[in-house]
Image 1: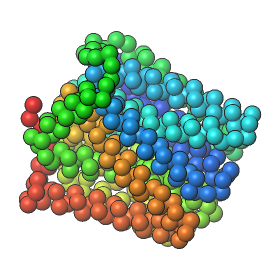
Image 2 (image 1 turned 180 degrees about the vertical axis):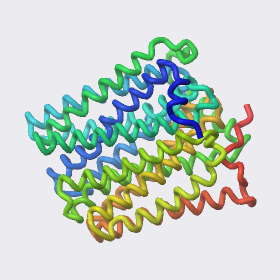
Image 3 (image 1 turned 120 degrees about the vertical axis):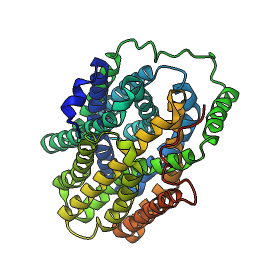
Image 4 (image 1 turned 45 degrees about the vertical axis):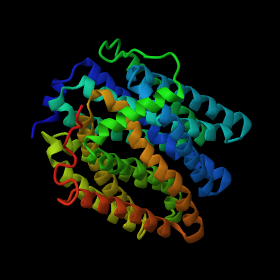
Length: 417
């Protein structure tokens, strides 16, 4: 294992700006889900209201994902990330001011939906930028480092939002998040011109037929290596876990009587676990060779931890969320890195969106069921249901990696161009 100091010395200025973009953006994201949940839950008193907002966001995602993948493979991912962050920052500030002036959360809900729509475009942009800025032999360790920075940002965002919440009020805590998205946009702007990434738009009109042809091209490329489909589906598990944790945090804290400090224990446990996983995996050379083992172990760990998280006090729950953060992040790092290496630069944007589509389809169906289960049967029943879903993911992964289907190299074989 080589030290992270060695890795940092190999990076140029643009790679550092990308890391700063990830840091600032995730400071904003770290507080946004928590503050949105608190604002909606405090006004409505219902977790179903928050779940409905999340589900509608995932449904709207599908439209943006359909058109977005092809566009991201033809225009600059730098420009896309820049636009997404600046627009999110401005809208959050406006929505927060509207809450103060009108005492209505309509603006918060609209911003939450917008965040859901634009989130996949941002993730796909960063997914596309990383392998084109970083040498291939450093990519797995850079991805792990990037995930570590992401989790550190979310931990800082959670801490600062909780501090402002305690010292001032929830509206000011919400508004402050917009500043971090604006700073994230500044960092992508600071990347400057990247000739290899400034792609030319082939058509001035993004018509339906053109979009269909772009997705057909991707599916034809995937057809040469069918295990890609399983890889993308399994990759969606990490995004799904994050979405479900965001939904469960507020009612879980309420059931355990954690009060304001409980959010730090619960969200903090998850984020610290994710940060530790990122740090440890960033020190492993050729991490992709271990992907199959790490992904399988991580999914089974997450399955058990979610089942156990509601069975004790706030500290017990914080520990199991630490395990979930550690295991799910380990899986995401391995799955993302191996997927980037498998698909090549021509398909990075569409592949990232394709991955989000799987997660959105599952979330649109699952999130309302989990929310209704919380209100009808309690938090533990919803945790049991979530654990069952992850059990299916883990079993599917184990089955696909068997010699009867794709075998040991299911996360390694590249598509044939």
